[in-house]
Image 1: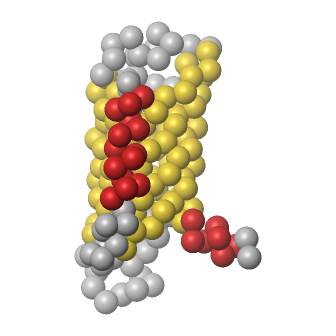
Image 2 (image 1 turned 45 degrees about the vertical axis):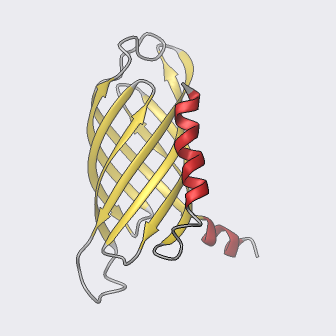
Image 3 (image 1 turned 90 degrees about the vertical axis):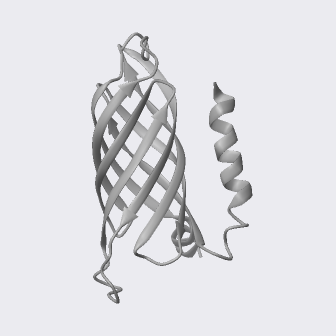
Length: 162
């Protein structure tokens, strides 16, 4: 099953230099909190694709870590988002985006909607549909889904380290 998650990650890394002529590509690290019938911490990376700042695309992969039925569990997650803000010619006030996307793990798939502030802080909610009826450690993951994420651009981290 891990092969299915490594292939999209490999393709994202290989294809991102090819897209630079058409779109700007930025790399992000992200960390956050996910509630899906259990509480999970999330750590991962994302690629942000933009041609202009009206419509922004993000692809990412991460690991969800937490306790399910009293046992520690780690679950891989792949996600894709579209960020929308159609205000024209306003750079500083172009601070919030509406977000629509989906995330898929080995245990559930969840469409989601929400908002992001400067593309750095995301708050989303959705509904998860179970893929694996056994769930994780015997706990089926379905129903309401809530995510809070902080995104850190690698460019910003490199500038801070100088």
